[in-house]
Image 1 (cartoon, rainbow, N blue to C red):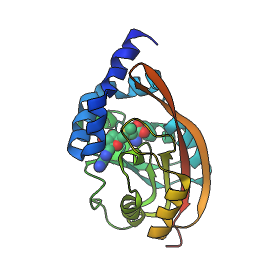
Image 2: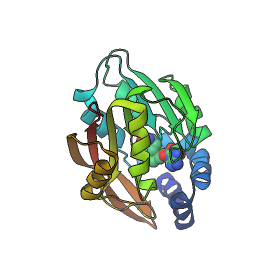
Image 3: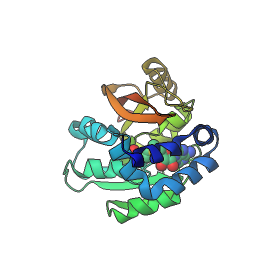
Length: 224
Ligand SMILES: C[S@@+](CC[C@H](N)C(=O)[O-])C[C@H]1O[C@@H](n2cnc3c(N)ncnc32)[C@H](O)[C@@H]1O
């Protein structure tokens, strides 16, 4: 790994990672300070494959004119990956804690609406404002994903597409498939239309590099 790689990976040192898992306020400040370098670091150093994998997983389920909410959109890598699918007239909105990440996303000219907000609270959208919700690389911040999924279900009418790490990233949370299916049952979303396990990213910590695996799921909520 090049020097620049080591320097960036130092960003994920023990105290920073502890903060990441603690409080939204600290998560916000870490992502704010990372925003300008985030895309470069994730793609070149951490080999972040999740947005592309998730977009490919979603491909068969998306329809022209879908209105997508990107939950924890960050700098907009997921919007970019979906955009590459070239589906007609898709509209994207995004919500994230980090105002600076949203600024980076805004410059990409993909999202028609970007909102700074905390997804652990009531989402600032009316019921069924969107047809599809996507949540990529975010569930590792939460021990219990059920309340977040419940809110996502309220604002999206047809589909929820999300991923969850099955390998534990340092100081964050992993989720087993069984646990996620139980959360889905709890909030009353049933049918898993598709799921796949994939290599999501490389997590660097104290000069060791760990492969983090993730499972992507598509949940059909049309019958809600
Ligand atoms: C690993 S990044 C993923 C960003 C983007 N989805 C992607 O795939 O590149 C995690 C994102 O979740 C956001 N996040 C974490 N906790 C959040 C919360 N409680 N409310 C809103 N956003 C949150 C962070 O600000 C960060 O942008």
